Amino acid sequence: MATAHHDEHPAGLMRWLTTTNHKDIGTLYLVFALIMFFVGGAMALVIRAELFQPGLQIVNPHFFNQMTTLHALVMIFGGVMPAFTGFANWQIPLMIGAPDMALPRLNNWSFWLLPFAFILLLSSLFVPGGGPSGGWTLYPPLSVQGSMGTDFTILAIHMMGISSVLGAINVIATILNMRAPGMTLLKMPLFVWTWLITAFLLLAVMPVLAGAVTMLLTDRHFGTHFFDASGGGDPVMFQHVFWFFGHPEVYILILPAFGIASQIIPTFARKPLFGYESMVYATASIAFLSFIVWAHHMFTVGMPLAGELFFMYATMMIAVPTGVKVFNWAATMWKGSLSFETPMLFAIAFVMLFTIGGFSGLMLAIVPADFQYHDTYFVVAHFHYVLVSGAVFAIIAGAYYWLPKWTGHMYNETLGKWHFWLSVIGFNLTFFPQHFLGLAGMPRRIPDYALQFTEFNQWSTVGAFLFGFSQLLFVAVVMQTVRGGKKAEAKAWEGAEGLEWTVPSPAPYHTFATPPRIK
Image (cartoon, rainbow, N blue to C red; front, side, top):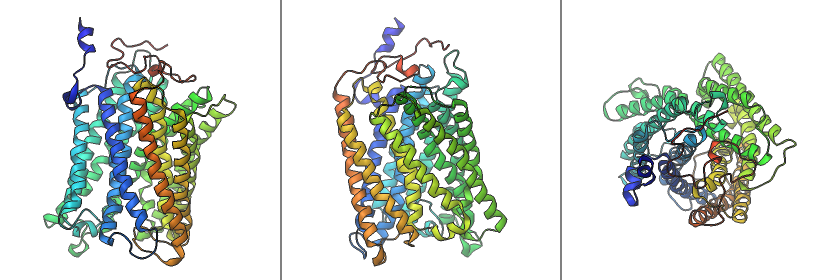
């Protein structure tokens, strides 16, 4: 009788507002992230349209600065992080054999904080003086002097931070307490491992950001001078506190991507992941090292030489565990029976392009070189190679990989491949020229530039529009797959291993009411 009751689920609007089911909440996160990717993408296209030609073309400089600030905040906190949280919600219970997340009501709340946070953030564009315009890093004095929109932003960041912390607590509680009998920690899929480590990172650094922006708020309204030089404060201190959050944050955005790649590559290579344990230890080492490298964002502030050397060597050390991962993926593919479906294509593009981003990061880690590269388009090229071809490509790869499991239908492979090639060409066309712009000395965050930078900027803008509009193909593929298509089997991919491929496709509303036994 009890099971019959559980099989029903509420329909209509209330189902989505009040749901505590991990699959529903996972879907909500993924849909929200998709919308935000398009909002943030529209802002990026405003930036690129302005930079198509030198001189002030389309928008005024103040609005341009608001776009550069909000584009980053929306993409990071509204796109990448909710997308990965959506994957976590959907996949972690399925992968560890749990019936649901450990704290289902908290799960609902941590999602519903987000839409309100982003309504608040985006409405800052409509207040007198406009939205935040001091860059996503919110550096004082710009953020102390900014308009009311900056207050909206700070409150929105608080809400996103609470949502992230609650989500992280939920992930940790689920993974540590709800694994099926026999599933030891070192039998967990790598995606689950990367998320466990990411959740601890979130718990450690989100409060630091909350503290920093609260001090900005008191500087703005309550006469404190933490970061205000006119009252004896220190704006560089803000940078230290911000980047102590900001660098681990970069790894919060990339570790789940490593987890997704580590699920997809073995599936399509049809052999187990090479060096599973070393991958786990490498992930943990990256997370540990991420706390001792923050000042590499600040080499140019006038640090003592010993400080610069410490942060330079610590940053270079991160390349070691990351290299371990890349070589392990390559070794997994070596002599495997590879097939190149869309998830695999995105996963391979992720490995190759992320590695380029890694190398340009090593260039930025070298102090004397960084003095040349700092605050130029070289940095923009570097972090987009890490975050777009890293985090975003992994999200798309994961979406194609698990769509059959979520919807019960296979997606259209031809459209998927079109989406892949247009994305990869558009992405490289956008960001590769920016390395050269940066090396030639074009500064970032400016709406105008010298004539000699025109050609590369034009290439970059054409690439951006190609990349942006090719994402509409992805939406078409997803909607088509949700509506119908070829039926997917329980094990949608030949080489797929793991508990999620033992339940029917689409995954039933309630799975694992009796936990599976792991041998």
